[in-house]
Length: 334
Ligand code: BDR
Ligand code: CA
Image (cartoon, rainbow, N blue to C red; front, side, top):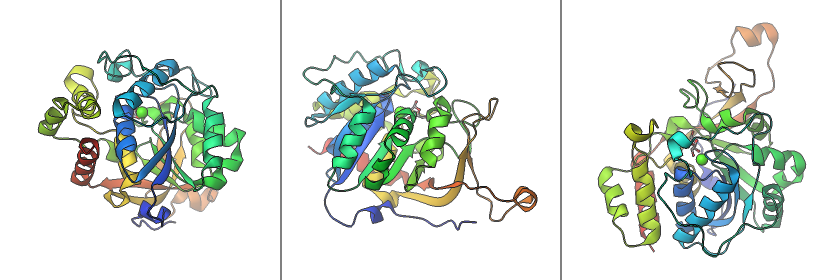
C-alpha cells in the first residue's frame, strides 16, 4: 500500500528557467481561462497547443483556441487539430455548459492571422516533446484521445516528458454521470492508456477543480478591464452561471485553469500517491476513476491477490485563495 504524502511538483524543475509546457485542450470556456494563464505566467513556457473533440467539435475547438491566443497576445506558437472523436464512442459535446460555440456564445471574432499548423496533433506533440531541450510537462484539460494516440504511436516521447498533469476524474462525485467526470467519461479507454503511460502523473480532478472560484467583485473588475485578455477572462468567468447553464461549478470557477496553476505553483495543491483505475465496463460506472484510498488490503486482495495498478498523484486539497490570487495577478499584470 502507498502512504499518503503531499508532493510538490516544484521538485520537477530545479532550474529557475520557465517550465516547458504543452496544453492539450477542448476550448471550452475554462480551457480558454487555462490558455490565458499559461500564456501570461512568466514561469511557464507554452510551447504548443493541441486540440481535441470534447466540449465542442474539434474544428470549433481549433477556432476557439486561435481566438483566445489572439486575445491573450500570445507569441506565435503552433496549434494543431487532433482527434475528432473518442477512440471507441461517438463525440458527445457539452454545449449545455459551454454554449453552441464552446465559448459561452460570447460572439467572439474569428482568429485574425493565426492558423493551425498543417500537421496533426499527435505529430506536433511528438515533434515538440522530443525537440524540447528540457523535459516537457503535458497538461491535458480535455478528453485524453490525443494523448492516448500519442502514447501508442510514439511511446518514445515518454523519455522527454517530466510529468503529465491532467484535468480529469474524480475521487468522490462525477459530473457527466454520478461517478464519472466528463473528460474521462468522454473517452475512458484513452484515460486508461494515459494512466499507464509510465511517467509521473498528477490528477487534478473534480474534487479540487470545483473549489477554486473567483469572487464576483474580481470577476466584475476583469470584465470592465480595457485590456483584451483580462476582459475576456472576466467574460468567461461570468459565463459559468449554474442558474443559466445547469453547470454545477458556480460563476467564477477557474476550472481547467486550476490544473495550470498546479504546474506553475505546486505548493498550492496537496496530492497523495494512490492507485487509480478507470472503469471501462458498460453501465453506470463507465468512466469512473476508482481511487483506492484504503489504508490496507481488503478481502478482494486477500482472496484473489493484487493486480498491477497505476499510481497517480491525486489532488485531494487545494489552497483556493492562493490560486485565485495567482490567477488574477497573472492575468492582470502586463
Ligand atoms: C471538464 O469538462 C469540460 O467541460 C471542462 O472544460 C473540463 O475540462 C470538467 O469535467
Ligand atoms: Ca476542458
